[in-house]
Length: 294
Image (cartoon, rainbow, N blue to C red; front, side):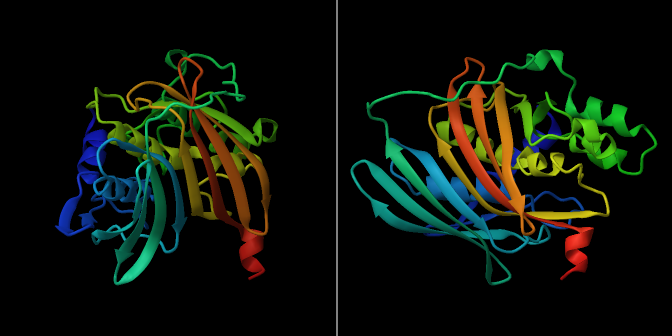
């Protein structure tokens, strides 16, 4: 287990400071704002700790309201909206400096039988073991002497293997631009058999690459002077149990962008081709041109 993954697992071990109130911290690194996937994952941990055993999260709907400050802890206030026989509903507000920075509603459901079908098919893509790691790919692209190479190639908790071009590649080559992208990912360690932990890590990873699909269609890339972006809202539906320490294919597409916003949606498949998670996210995306107009 690399140090980056150890730190994420430590960040998810929230401190309970009051009844239905928890405190989480952020990594000790120089970043402008807290990673959205971290806030969503910590909020889901807080909600899950208040739910009766036997119920698993099946959906969440979240809004990113303000940038998170990585220098101070985040307080998660959980409201027990309802506990029924089959479903439990929770609302979580993440608070910093006395203001809400994030809100989430999450629903939990007992396991019960029902009708089944799967219309979505996993894309035919190369196996993850045949693909380079993100660190290998980005180092080959930007070179050893690039000013951002150290930041881009630093160890990450998620082992991501890109089937599709990176946004930085599409930024340089217009022929690589597309509104679709496929990425294999897993947390490269033997994790405990805790269903909530695997769902939480899936939520954490879901925010890594989804907005990239919007940028990829336009040849925009993070770290360049012509782009500024931030997540606005995020929704997930968890269809089947899965393990975050096993390979998952994240098939993503951007059906629309406009008005300084972009929509992206994704589907996560396990190695057997079963659809395990569906995701939709909208992000604010401002280019140099749109910022100059405001």
